[in-house]
Length: 305
Image (tube, rainbow, N blue to C red):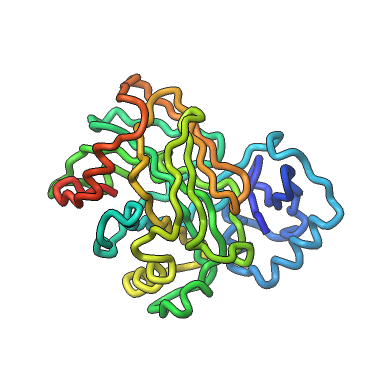
């Protein structure tokens, strides 16, 4: 099932190029915030699924392009991003498994705008990633059981500012946590619809020019391992979002006026965002081959993620 939140955070199901209203499934329930609705769906999925199926049965719905598609998990308790988690088309050895926390307030939805901050970054990059959402509490999970804890999958963009130095060198916080730097969605696709999350193709276009095109099979640390290892460090809770990293070989800059589109075919509608830079900074367009080469070389001083 392809779940979405749309317009004023109404629950819907994507069917083809249409979205069908599923709010009847949550009739009588109250939420402190509209975005908490998806938490209810995830946490109580066994009971909610038949209600949602009944709510959308026989409805024609409305065209996807006639609604505003929100981020499907607007305010997760945790947003964890795997760092340097690709083999760069087999051109480097696996990096040590590592991750960083990205601010949930950075999350925006389809059609929204990513605003580049006035900080003195050397460049801003797009990073399209497969993300997954935890469906039940996970602590010290084995790799064998790990996928049982996945509720679903979604598109994710880890927008990045480069060259912002922290107290001990590269700063994940200054590079990754700006508001609007975590576009997500638009659909949250339940795990039963994805036969193998390690056999998906991630694609991105900047102003319709092709950039990223890489398989999730190139991950150094697959999803089973990410869940198992992360759950040893911190308890994963329903609704937590984990992004799986990017292959940096087709990375490129973003700048004012750009439109970014990422796609994982099995996840339904593409994720589209717009770039705004009030300062109007510019960089050479196209693929940043120098940065890709640096990742392959594993240059530790720059800690590319």
